[in-house]
Amino acid sequence: MPTTKKESFYFGLMMCFGMALFMTSYNLWTNGLLGTISLEGLLIQFILVYIIAFVLESFLVGPIAKKLAFALPFDKSKKVLVILSMAFFMVSGMVLCMSLYGLGTAYYFHSIDGQAILASYFTFVGKNFIVAFPLQLFIVGPIVRYLFTRFVKEKRSAESFR
Image (cartoon, rainbow, N blue to C red; front, side, top):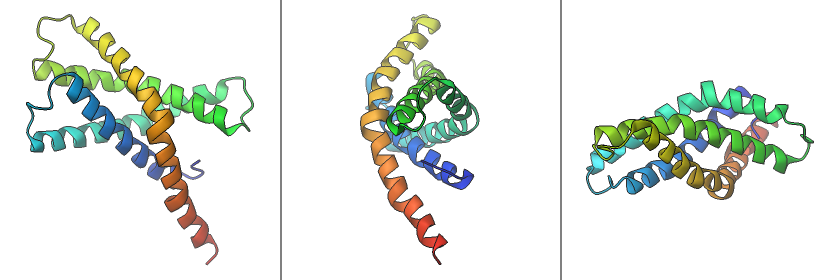
């Protein structure tokens, strides 16, 4: 989809926004924190998750996921296979990283008192992957690709004709 660094930046911002919005809501809900945090706290939580996710996606997980996805032996001209492999590696990497953030948040708000940290982490990873992968494939990914093509790519095409 993105072909330039600028387009990659916009695409990353859009994808992180959608995934951070849904996954923050999901994690707060599953950990019983939605009713305990103020609206201001929720907003701060979302902004923190968004920034952390974007930095991770841009500088760590994204480059590694791209290398892994394109190292697989499949026909790269088949767009659906590229999307599936990128989604799998991106979601896997982001879930592993962002579950650490979720673990820290749950620990701070005392929602994992008395539980082993490592067991809690792997529980978070499992719960997050089960939701994040279909969310990426069927909801956020298609919406972001549509909006990106419609507004970012279309705008760039219109500018090149001037």
